Length: 263
Image (tube, rainbow, N blue to C red; front, side, top):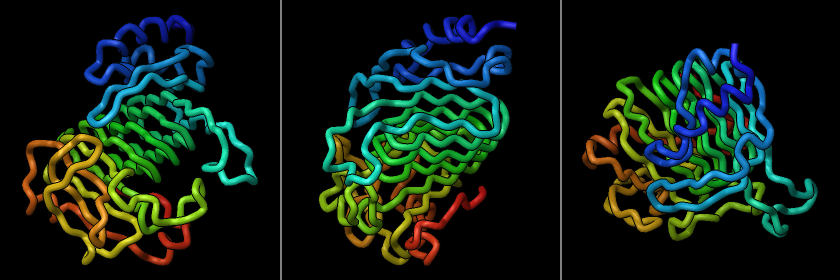
């Protein structure tokens, strides 16, 4: 059986050649042996996705088949508004295995590949990059400008988007943080039977129209007139996308007690 360091050295070269330069390939024989955090396995990673690119310091690298995978949060003073502090942006690189994983990125600009299986993902506060891999997955980007990457896997996925405009974000201590689409999520290819849920508004408030955000021009998902996401995939039209999107302004959502829906 390979050691953690040997397993990672086998996988790491592939990371630089993936289509967005960052997510680790899943090798089942290796992944079965790896189920813990690898500290300082990667010092930095270069993220290159539609709308932005940047080199980020890595605070944790996890390759795991454990039922629950958790990243490392950003370092800030707990009782002080985070937005008022000088917080160093870091990334947790989280990769699930073949089984059903629950993955929690916490705060940070995290990169998450849930792998095979029916997975549940919470990106946490920050600019996350999320792919569910194969299986029927529930993917929450949470607050911030997130990227849902290539989730067209012929199985039904649920993408859950917290409205940065209508829900209060603890980072800022207020709602109304997306007046001009600056925190709109980017969504690449989906299956026509996937679902998208916008938290903080009712379904009747959802509209689809052409829009631009982060230098990406495509189909925009609007919540009561505010741009929440842009679908940059090529296989869906306005009618199809509208049928896929619903809202949820229930008391559980507004009181911050809504858990995973279950796909």
